[in-house]
Image (cartoon, rainbow, N blue to C red; front, side):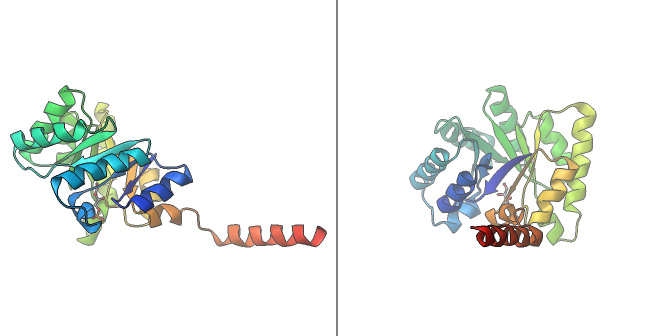
Length: 217
Ligand code: E4P
């Protein structure tokens, strides 16, 4: 399972990269705004900075909602660095743009996926990744993890190569549940990733090992 971090915060990206477990980064316009990154030039520079920090794929989202605009923006984003994955919204023109980029060998991530039907369309359009937002489904009392399981079944039925990128992951258990279901990738906050480290018996055991070592030295 690949681990992506869902942030535009350079310090958090550095920290996750330094842990040695990071496979990539996802961003979206809200995450860029949260870091105060505004204006086309600054946004493009920020994507370049993120690519410098990580070895893996970096999803960069288009703002346009029409096919021509998405192609123009996506081509500019893809030209920044081969690590860039063009992130496209799950709307009709987004699917069309996804097919356009897939045919050109440019990596894509279809975002804002909330149903298995949308997931099927993303795979048909040749998306590299598709992002079902499990946390946002949970927020409206709908089964986000159930959607991941449904998509896994459908993709396996037909051998689709599109990778299931479980997005809107909110906590550590989401990561573990996605791993059990067989999501290819998860993207979430650093806190959810670091939560995997925690177990009281690890802390107690380590404290005892160190105390016993001190007794004999
Ligand atoms: C995915 O690519 C999105 O950036 C993200 O996971 C959305 O998460 P949120 O629902 O916590 O905003």
